[in-house]
Amino acid sequence: MITIQPVVLSGGSGTRLWPLSREKYPKQLLSLVGEDSLLQATVRRVDGIDGVALTEPMVVCGEEYRFVIAEQLRLMNRPGRIVLEPLGRNTAPALTIAAQAAIKNGADVVLLVMPADHVILDGAAFQAAVRQGATLAEQGAVITFGITPDAPETGYGYIQAGEAYAGAHRIARFVEKPDLATAQSYLDAGTYLWNSGIFMVRASVWLAAIAACRPDIAAACGTAWEQGQTDGEFTRVEKTAFAQCPSDSIDYAVMERLASLANAKLPVGVVIPLRAGWSDVGSWDALWQVLPKDATGNVAQGDVLLQDCANTLALSEGRLIACVGVNDLIVVETADAILVCHKDATQDVKKIVDRLKAQGRSESSIHRKVFRPWGWYDGVDAGERFQVKRIVVKPQGILSLQMHHHRAEHWIVVSGTARVTCGEKSFLVSENQSTFIPLGTTHRLENPGRVPLEMIEVQSGSYLGEDDIVRFEDVYGR
Image 1 (cartoon, rainbow, N blue to C red):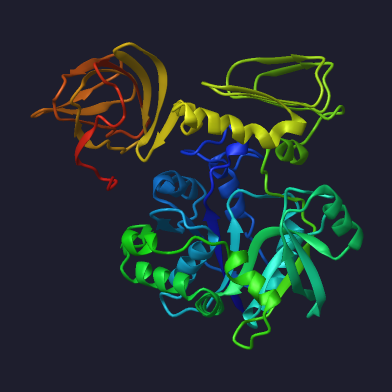
Image 2: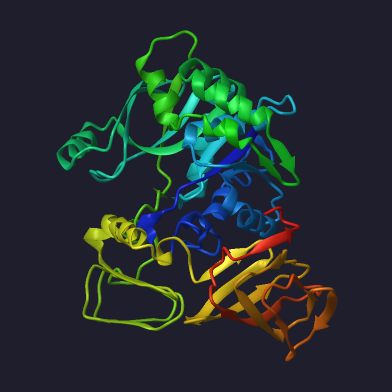
């Protein structure tokens, strides 16, 4: 029986889905279609594939997302392996590290490589294509899946399918995102497929192919892997060595060479056509297309009222959105930002994010609600020399032992029980009780109970930035 190792590549910031998707909490971590996050849906997509054995999932991601991804896997009861990249180097190095992790114990499994931020509506069709790809990958081919196009899309790269090969097609060539006329000619030709970014390849085959095509990437990743370390569920590659690795995609580094070079040292490149309701959810318009709509083409999520509207997406995270007599609009409300955009201009949302970054505004990268390994906090209010946060600490959660140079803190427990360390003292604070942490005092907050601890924190001082934290001990290794 063929063994498949699901590999989920969780990179990218999804800036075209701002203000929901942001650099510090990107779209793959969000529940945009159904209750699962896109990452969770990607992991769940392989459940129950007939005729193959599945290993635990492997997620390749950046350091800053490790705890929230671990928590999402825990909520699914999927104790997967999380491989951490100290900095982004695109998909070819990410897959190379994953292949090295997969063969660590001598197993040469078939890797099913999936971006974490895609939507696939027809799971049965996807699994049928994966079963077909697993057989070819086990035999030594490198498989990619091409989406059968239904429109002259200019936002995707294309793969031209060549001669028939074992029920699929050899890859004839890759082409970049075309203009509209070229895209229409591809659609008319019937031999071009959208490039999905999903791959299947045996671990040893990929390592041999990357060594032949890009020995610089293979060498840098090999050194970074050998000098890395494992910390519980996290595997870290060595930062200095990985920083020397060139940045390149799977397509550029290897796949295009399989199509263009006749080289006996390279495996055959194969594309399998896929009709499975696929979308990369790269914009608000793309999300609107995959979500269920009412009779007039509207999508409403959250506290939304629509009157005489058509083909509109309105999404509220809290406040009421009311739309009257509008067509083809995107309206998205979050705690600290509202987006109003015509559906034809959704690709330009990134320009707003770029302007926010240029102005140094935090809304470009973080939400008001910020997740931490111990729970989360929400910045409720702020003004000159004060800031108010709502803090929730999960059961057994422990914040770092820390100190602030520029602020004092007042803590009021709303529900649950807090164990507080303040200087040399340690004591419990229960519901409706409060305590004070003076400026410059070493302190720690813990939740020793079995229910979430909810509290209000009022900070006061001359500087209230998150970088005014001196950590002495931290169970999460930050």
